[in-house]
Length: 486
Image (cartoon, rainbow, N blue to C red; front, side):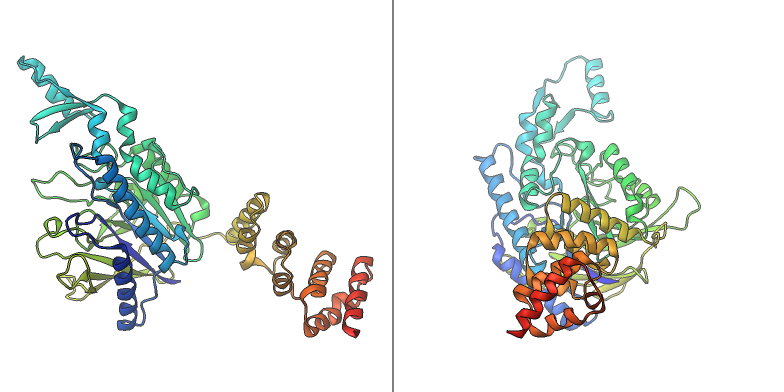
């Protein structure tokens, strides 16, 4: 199947010249239409990945830091809701969001830590330095204060994602939660139509403004990799998203160790999406832990809203549109960039990749590790429908069964949902021709209420009805016949 993904990242606004949400949404929507007109093969995106940095953040000693963080998160939430409403028919599960380093609340970090007095003893100083460089250290170094701080309130430190957590749970309206526990900070977004599964990872484990390196919690990664190998995802395109970039210069320390990519490749992931470096780019990472000829294609997005001082030299704001064909296992990455100089009202147009001198680049995707077993999709659909029926979610049950409506078990399950919905028109459209007594009674009753002459006649003349002698069916036939003679 061919489909497109909208890839946004680093939404943090320039606080001195903020982009209004209304303009930002309008400008993106117009540019997507422009891209489709320029290149007719580009389908309108059916989902979006937002790879972190939803807000800019504040200094901990800023006046009203809490109120300002709430304002920024509210602004970002409003943007994401409008994005889902305008581009994805209000389906918020079509928008994947993850945290970035700007989403870490510095005020929560400082309130959970205490200043560590520098000892005068040389040996004690050496011990402090060893502790600072140890794995999972609770020590932090502040260059602005030239002082050590120690995280003393661990539970309080975990609350540095509290603003992001609130935004996450409000955006998904309670259908998804963002756990406080680091080893549970990952989520899956499964797209049945596209045959795509995206695992959303948090690369800000142990990350804060005093400890800038990216990291993914090892337990969270292990659990995510295990779930990636679930039979329910066999044969699908597996993708992952995180925030931090994977390389940096000798004076940089705010990137992610790329070794975790090997574990993702081993688990069948073929596509990775990230942000942070404020630059649109791509490369392939090859599998190096064994003889498998597999790879992971990694795509980074530019920043959507950063101010001039947060842009890399010669690199404007931008975003990506990815075309995916998960039957031919190829993709095309389109780079879109800001083409005007009015930072509060950006306009977008084609970017340029240095390696192709074009606004797009083509790449091959590694196919799935395992093919999809025959009958698996129907089994999963029936299981999902059964779960929806148990919760009284009749519309969702019918949606899950729609692709398999010709199957007897699917029709029997759908019959219950139709009865509960009590929508005669819907029942007539879905059942059309009855295949058993229960369907005949429900369809006949619906035809008595909302059927027209043609549909009633078709029902009465159908072979199943014509030869059926069941008392309940006979009663429906008599009522319909009487209704048609009036």
